[in-house]
Length: 93
Image (cartoon, rainbow, N blue to C red; front, side, top):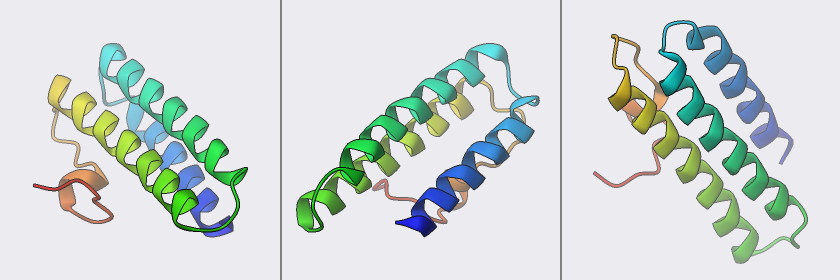
């Protein structure tokens, strides 16, 4: 769980650093998705270990990735998000 929080923190930091490259509208979409994903992850943290908790954590990852994809579609200026490289991608293509 600590590693997951570290990755979320690193992702948020990276988004802030790269955020200057996106339009305000794309930033807003990505920020909203990150906030929703964090809320889902917080719910998962309160759950007992098991498949339901893992499913909730995966849902948080998917919500965040979909937000990145939507932001990139809105304002693709050459930035390559992790979800576009396939690394850590939970979405089916």
